[in-house]
Every structure is written in C-alpha cells, then in structure tokens.
Image 1 (cartoon, helix red, strand yellow):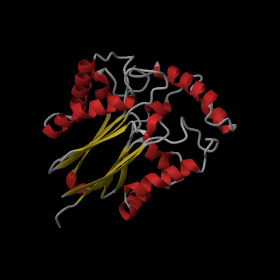
Image 2: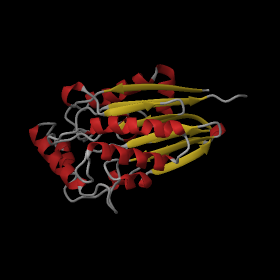
Image 3: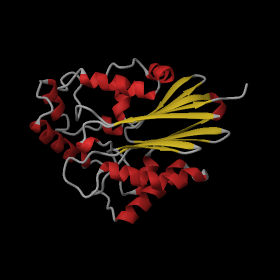
Image 4: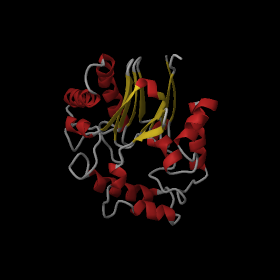
Length: 274
C-alpha cells in the first residue's frame, strides 16, 4: 500500500498564483516548478509546467518506458503542440517518483530534488548543475541583498540581468539542463532506482521547500523535515519554511530571487507486509 500527501502554496508571484505543478497518479508522483518569466512573454513557466505535466500523465501511467524516455516524449509533444522553439520557450524543473511491485525510480531535472528514505537512510537525488554554474555577474543581485538593498525595483533589474546571463547556459554542454523545447534535456536528468522493499518513504519538493534544508535553518536535515511532515502534515512544513522567509523580509540573511517562492511538497509512504 502507498500513501501520498501533498501541500502547495503560492509565493510572491503576480496574481497570487503558483507556477509549481503537482501530478499524482496511481503509480507515480511528479513536481514541476515552472521558471518565472521576468520579461513579458506569451506563455509563463507555470503554464508550461502544467502543459508538460499533462503530457507526462499517460506516459507515466503506462509504466513501460524509462523515465527519461517518457519525459523526452512529453517535452517533444508539448513543444510540437504549441510551436515552442529551443532557446525561446518557457521552462520547468521536473522531479518524478514512480513505483511498481518490485522497484522505486526517481528522476530529477534541475533544482527540484527527490529524497528517498531507505532502510539505510536518506538518499538525496539532486541536480546541482545550475547551482554550480559560474557566470561573471550572476551573483550581483545577491551581493546587493546582503548589503541591505532589499527586493526593490533595482533588485528586479539586477535579477533580470542575472537570468539573461545564466540563460545562455541553458541546455548546452557545460551548462545546466531543464525541461524546455529540446527533448535531449530529458536524457541529462539524474536517475536512480531502488528495490521497493528497501524504500520506506520519499519526498519531492520544489526549491521553495527544499530551501528549508539547503538554505534556511528551518530543518537540520531531510529526516527532520520528513518527521515534521509525518507528525503535523505537509502544510506544516510549508508554513515553517515560509516563516523563515518572513524572518528575513529584505533577503539580507538569505539572499534569494524573491521574498517568497512558490512551494510544492509531496510525501509518499510505502507500507510493506511483515
């Protein structure tokens, strides 16, 4: 038996809507975090994440194809259906967990990690290529936040410049990979698998939640976050991470793109017969 619980919460985006998308199926779950567009565009990252999730749905339910192949097909179908072109299309992270009677699989593309808790401890499946990317002026907005500049109009300008510079390295060798309009990106995802009897629980999180472990001091580690989710529910996790953001309203302690990020968390628990 498998139990799935989810929680979602919008951040500081326009209209109070989230660009995170959660997909829950009988044999799989997925979290997609659409990249926020800082310039006017026809389609937003949230729109793309929702469209891609719907293309993923039948592929994941079918179970037959490998996860990377399923994602590649979904990316190709989304791009074809809407005339999206590599380099000018909206994009999204993708994190997938799929299971059957014998195994559990995870795929992570860009910065929405999966954490699988096995009989030997927590195993983090993460894609750190964007975080490790070094661009000459990419950290300028963070330096200004540390100095007390805050989330003002100049911050928005600096952030747009950083995103423009970073985007040149999207889906190219030596850069980072994300779901967009080129299906090749799917084959650059991080993929792991485990025998199902070893897996006790798993988490999928957008970076608006993973920051509670990786950036803020909301949780000392992933097992602590899972324990809190089990005790008080996934929404309590989101609230604790949001409280950390509230405690740093100008971003001087934890420099970040925006005051509040969209949040999505999926908690999967596996029960095994004794």
